[in-house]
Structure formats: structure tokens, C-alpha cells
Length: 121
Image 1 (cartoon, rainbow, N blue to C red):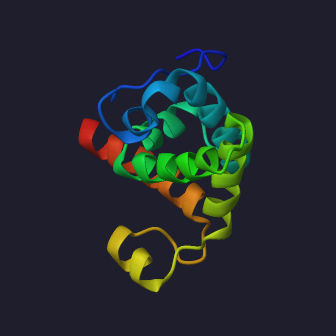
Image 2 (image 1 turned 135 degrees about the horizontal axis):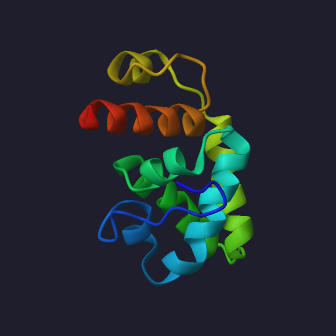
């Protein structure tokens, strides 16, 4: 995939896209690039994360910001900050295999890619 091309959702019904509803077209490119910038993970990994169950939960945080009258950019930035502040704890680490202490956002983006790789291997 060309690194200059933003991957499109593969899950319009659920995940981030489905949760964002009518805002999805505007929110998707902002979220995917900001998350990639913050986590250092490739756009393709972020796309897989956003299409996952955790992507739906991330969209809930964005929706909270929009309900507080933030702009889309600000709502996504606020959700990213929240997910980067949260750290993977002992129980989540045991359940998911994500290393304890890693920021939630980074951990779940990496985990989404690992799960995708395992399913396509």
C-alpha cells in the first residue's frame, strides 16, 4: 500500500466508522493520521484498530467530545490524549497480552495488527 494513501475502512457497519455515523467521512482521515502520528504505528495498523471493537470504544470518546461542542479535530485530539493517558494494567495485560504500562492507544493499535497478522497467516 502506498504510504501516502489513507486506508479506507473495511467495517462501515461497526467499529469507529459505524459509531461515528454521519461524521465518519470527516472523522476518519483526521483520526487515522493523528493516531498514527501519536503512536508511531503505520496507517494500516491504525485502520485495523479503528475497524475493531476497540475502534468503536475510541469513537465513543470522540462522540463525547463532540457532545461537549468540540470541533472534530479537538474531539479526536481529546480522545487520543485520554487513551494515551490510560495505561494497560495487570488484568488487561493478562487478558490481552499487551505489556503492562503501555498506553492504551498504542497497545490496542499494535494488538489489532498482531491479531490481523495471525488471522491471515
